[in-house]
Length: 341
Image 1 (cartoon, rainbow, N blue to C red):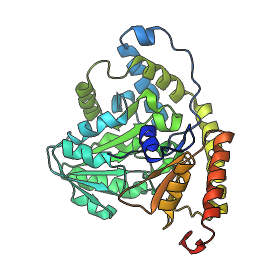
Image 2 (image 1 turned 120 degrees about the horizontal axis):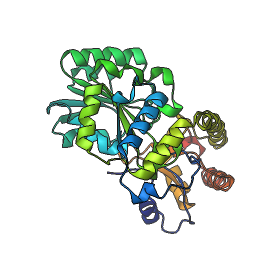
Image 3 (image 1 turned 180 degrees about the horizontal axis):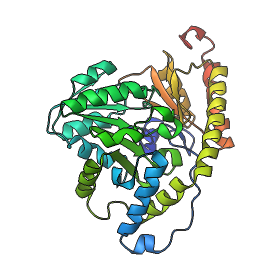
């Protein structure tokens, strides 16, 4: 499966590019939560159940669910995908796409017959309906009222709605379903690593009704969340000031990115404040031109006219991106009609 963030793959594609790469392919916050010294026990002892309960309580408050009983914590949302898909007997799974490809793969692992659909209304025909909100990679948002209506119709026939809110930390929170999981038939996935910029910590959550959360916890077993992840999750999710300040910083950064892309005549078609979605005919040449200069963005083999670009993390990275874009524009001056068409 092709994902962003593979520097080994980038080196194979662009062996002569200057190193290190400026990796803008992941959509992960480049301004990570401040690192701190971990207590030795986070590494030398098995995680304590009381600490996991504390994390669940803080996550419940941070994400707006009624209590910790509605939270299942895991070593990243990736490991939850096939387990959530297995909550239902094998049936028909529909994924609203194009989107993150792992949802379809996980549903297939769980035994479902899987199809991707582009029409939201088609999801009502599923036993298991999956969507990402805001969507990856285009940032599309489905309104809460439509999601609740779909959830009710699925619940009436014993189905399940899974909403991956990996980017909701920077999305329109009024459309989150986190506070509506108590009725059953809904699982909301929240990722820790993207907004907090700590993808390597491996921490994520399933928010759902209490019985389903208990079932997921039982499947994961004891000590599923590592000691360092507990420490970072508890501190970062409690730090509301850092979160508010970071949302403002990301809004400024993505405004700067929009302006830079605009000066290069690169149209922005969507996204969130962690990434921008580009869809235009010259996308393949832009991907190659940036890669040759050591700037890696996300491309999609099945949709060559589409790119996703994240945020630079330092002034030096901003300057490398600006320089690479300027070189691409200069090289294309003889064929300006392709830009933005």
